[in-house]
Each structure stands twice: as C-alpha cells, then as structure tokens.
Amino acid sequence: MANIDLANLNYSIQNQFRGLNGRHPGLWPILPRILVALGVVLAMVVLGYFLYWQGQLEQHEQLVQEESKLRADFQTKMTQAVNLEALQEQKKLVAERVSKLEKKLPSKASMDSLLSEINQAGVGMNMVPELFQPQSATVKEYYAELPIKIKVFGTYHDIALFAQNIAKLSRIVTLNDMILDIPKEATQPKDGSILELDVTAKTFRYLDPEEVAAQRKATEKDKKGAKK
Image (cartoon, rainbow, N blue to C red; front, side):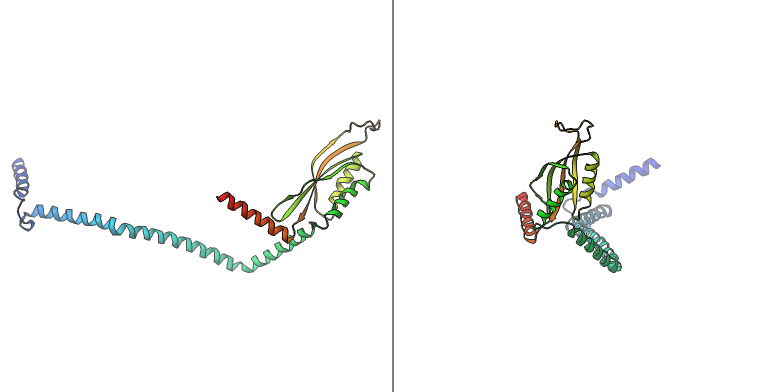
C-alpha cells in the first residue's frame, strides 16, 4: 500500500506540471503556482540585495566605523581636557628646559671665543698642541654641529685633566673617537710618560632665524623633489 500511495503521489505531482504551456498562471494547479511564487520572491530578494540593500549595508558599516573613530577621538579629547592644566604645566617646564639648553649652545657670533676656550683647555696645562683643526659644520634642522680635530701630547694625568677641563666648559662640547697611544717622536722621555691623544671634539651652535628659515626651505624643496 505504501508503494502504491507513493506512486500515486509522484503521479499526482507530475500531473500538475503537465500542460502548463499556453495556460494562464492563474489557472495552474496549486503546486506550480507555489513554486513560481517562491521563485519570484527569491528573485526579488536577490535583486533587492544587490540593487539596494548591499549599498545600505556598506553605508551602515562605514557609519559604524566612523562612529567608533569619533568615540575614540572624543575620549582622547576628554582625557586631554581633564588633564589640560597638567599638560600646560608640563609644556611650560619643557619650554624652560629647552631655553636652558639653548643657552648652552653658542651662537654663530660666539663660536670663535668657544674655539679659543677649547684650545686653551690644553695650552693652559703646558700640553703640546700638535693639531687643532675645525672641520666643516654639519647643519641640522635647528642647530649646527662643528667637529674639531685635535691632537695633543702630554702625560696620562695631563690628558685626563684636559678632558676634565673640556667637560667644565660653559658650552656643550663632547669628545669623540678618542685614540690614546704612545707617540713615535724621538722626544719621548725614557720613562715613556708622554702620550699622544687623537680626538674629535664636537660642539654645537643654534642656528640664526635666517639660517632656520633657509634650512626649512631646503628641507621642503628636498621633499618636493622626492615626491616627483
């Protein structure tokens, strides 16, 4: 009986799809009409998604991301607003420190006196200066770096005092690439107490307003050239 009923059901379903050509859909049996209606609904959903809902969903996603970004910016600004007085005080302290450091940097006009002080740091101790040769300055964004090649002869104690005197200068001077060796000159005492110091002293000076403007102009020109 189950096989007979199943066969009859298959025949009934197949029979509903026969002879549909040329007939008005409203006169079709119930099953074809239901399938056609489902197909139309599915087609409308697919077309609606690609023609309308997809753009709306993408716009919604963008708005959600923008909202998250605005919330983060708002929280950052709120934190800054709460700590505004502390930030202003910190800015004031930084400005004071920068001002103090700038005072330790010589100007272009006072470089000659600074070079004389560096030279006298060794001459005043009866050390024999063999070389004192300022090199070409390297200009940075806000300051210039001036290296000086120095070669002096003296005892170990004299050389230590020379380095100490350099450190005590009112301006910033650093000693770099230090080479301490026994000189090859025949004037070396028998006890070998005289040493040779090869060193590069670096001092720094702040740029004049005109130099800062020129340096910024050159930097902007280089950036434009790199973009091309």
